[in-house]
Length: 210
Image 1 (cartoon, rainbow, N blue to C red):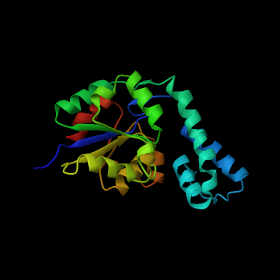
Image 2 (cartoon, rainbow, N blue to C red):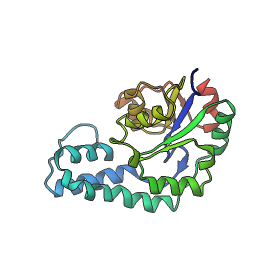
Image 3 (cartoon, rainbow, N blue to C red):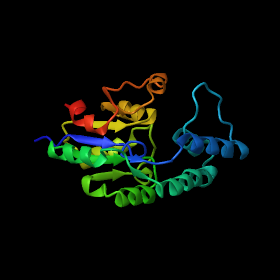
């Protein structure tokens, strides 16, 4: 017997509207590790914070705590100003009525994710929350899907919904479809992300999943 279909959401800028600036996080992390002597290879596409963390773990693990302190500080500031994305509750409720299990998969720390989800009253609509404390590697690595599949090993379908290229790459690397929510289409194309659907409102999600 197969398990339920599972819809996995990113958190910031997908279910939650927050001032968390991931580019600023990456810029601060890059400046820190360069200042501490780590050679960050030059490349055409900008480094993301998760990619920089992966580089630190491979090349300079002694810098990991200092590097992680940067996103943690940004997350603490952002969570106080976080609010629901339009129709987030309605979309989650509709999916559960359609028989979907629902999950969040975020690169944020557990403390920040749980605080925001609890304050916004989304936790009651979610079956699983996967944070950076639950994985070995952050998105764009697909490791979070390992946690999702452990919860629903017989799921007939797993789909990821997110706003960023890191969500799309992680979904593709994990072999599941990706739905872009208010995504930057040029950036998705530059990163080689293929979205099976693109939506501008969470109210459109049930139709996109169909």
